[in-house]
Image: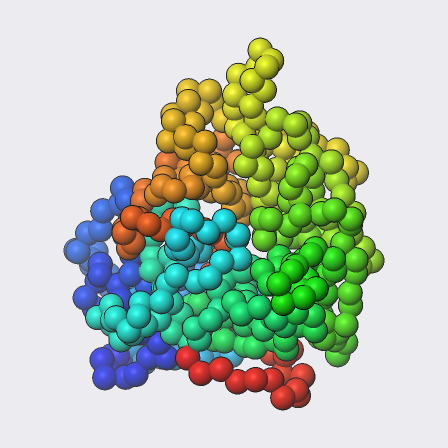
Length: 440
């Protein structure tokens, strides 16, 4: 096997402090895990005869940090990221990783679609990422943090939604919104056509399936340069069958709705978002292009309600405070039943843990994001966060992210499944439109 020459250029820069053998897209910190520098002896006469297709299959099962370290071994492994044969195998056999991707922003901002505060103002991290946006990947299986850079994303864009390995960035400037789809692992960036209606800070819903892309933008319609109202939604769709709709599908929002959270969650063919004052859930059926309201459980006693998707189901996470009744304060999780209108309480934080949680939270509120069997609960204004494993019924505190100074900043997260390939973005090549080009 030919050794890898360190002078070979990489499609993007890596920093990985654990190993000096090469370079990696990630910088990482792992809690509770020790690494041994010694390597067990292996008989090269046996392992050198391992069939290449079997070896590729093993590499396809590696988690992303291990895969990028393995690329430093030889030229062939380095080139796997550009091999269609390997990527097809990877898409077939690679296990799903239910990770999370976090960004920092100033504590004073309350909208979930926020102006990005990751610009380093020309500073460098020592690895060539000058002025690049940065995010923080969290692996709930290993309780590990990784830092990742978005060198191609231009200024004036902020993260808004995620799905199937892609992150959606939306333009900050008021008016028709431009969106970018990026794959953080491989550094790809694909532009969508701008929306038809001018908006300020709308809610963004992104749904990526193997053969189609759906994006829905709702609320904050600019009825004048100085006023906005939650009036309409517009949707973008493209699929492998050749059908596409460039924001031509519009729908009216329910009367008197307030999409203050800015976040939309996809589950079972519908997009959901919280409606405030009073609390309820707004649902958008993608197939029928209709909006409707769902009543929230115990809505008079909820505080900081959050919608999350876990294992294909819609969950509502909220604190319950019934001060006038003889019911202890608590944090509860409800599951939306198959009928689509009834909620059933499925989990409740242990009371002793909730007392500790409430003391840290101190009425500032919290935000939640769900993915697979995990729910992350982030306390606003602090670096404290809880991880709840639904399958194991286990609550545990997450170690603080080591890559940021928390003074004046807090983290906001997205569900993220790391993928080496997202071929669905190739559908956008069908749109031979004169999109505006952006330079990083």
